[in-house]
Image (cartoon, rainbow, N blue to C red; front, side, top):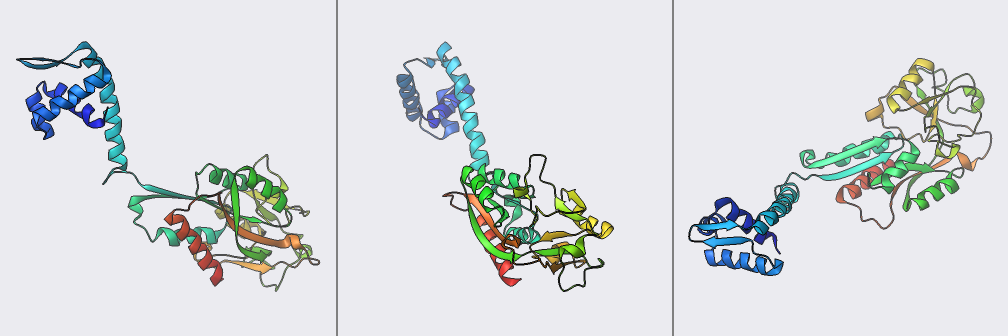
Amino acid sequence: MTLIQLSYLITIAETGSLNKAAEQLYVSQPSLTNAVKELEKELGVTLLYRSGRGVTLTNDGVEFLHYAKEIYHQYESLMKRYGKGGSYKKKFGVSTQHYSFAVKAFVDMAQEYDMSKYEFAIKETKTREVIHDVSTLKSEIGVLYLSDFNRKAMGKLLSAAHLEFHPLVVCRAYVYLWRGHPLAGEPSICFEQLAGYPCLAFDQGDDSTFYDAEEILSTSEYAQIIRANDRATMLNLMVGLNGYTLCSGIICEELNGKEFVAVPFQDEGPNPESAMEIGYITRKSIVLSEMGEKYIAAMKRYLAAV
């Protein structure tokens, strides 16, 4: 049974004539007749009753036509979406912790394409959702960081989700705050200086642990802490409450503006837990799409320039 045979039978039923069906299908009548006979032989039933007045469907033919139309309409829908000139758009998605450089790289990648022909998506979200999105292929690439503190726990999560971590850059902790903050002009900032200001952290949900935190040194004691869900709110809290957050220091002024600064964080002594290894995650053994390759290249270019 072939789709061509189904198409032939549907057209014969609609026209009620082998001659008219052959004309509409641009095939010879003998070819059309033979195709239907081969289908009847394969099925072991008679589909058409032939007479001098034309052709009509047998009872078996009426029942078979119902299913044939369903199958052929599904085929036509597939071709309309995926065939040449179809409506299907290639998809590419990224899920990331809250990094402005990851968004900037996404912008640079997307600008290389006619976006009317693609479906692009980027989501700044919780750490566990980054992992989930990539493991379920909702996103092709995820961006997050590892440190000596969370590496073992995160490694187990990534392994269980069949994901691989690919390092991009290693950086020390910075204090991120707005230019009007009393400490913005300091050459470096320690915890003692930050005691009177609220620490800002991205909310990771009720079931989160210290290992899920986006901010480095998440187990430190903070006299004041405020959790937010998005980067815009975080920036507003920096201005309104003189809040701060600990980050990688890789800030994209083009997207975040010039009203914020990153000042080196001064730890009390050598602390390997204050180093962030930022990278991207993918499904194991996956072959990256062209968009994925370009996105990673854009991240590497940006990080090499800062």
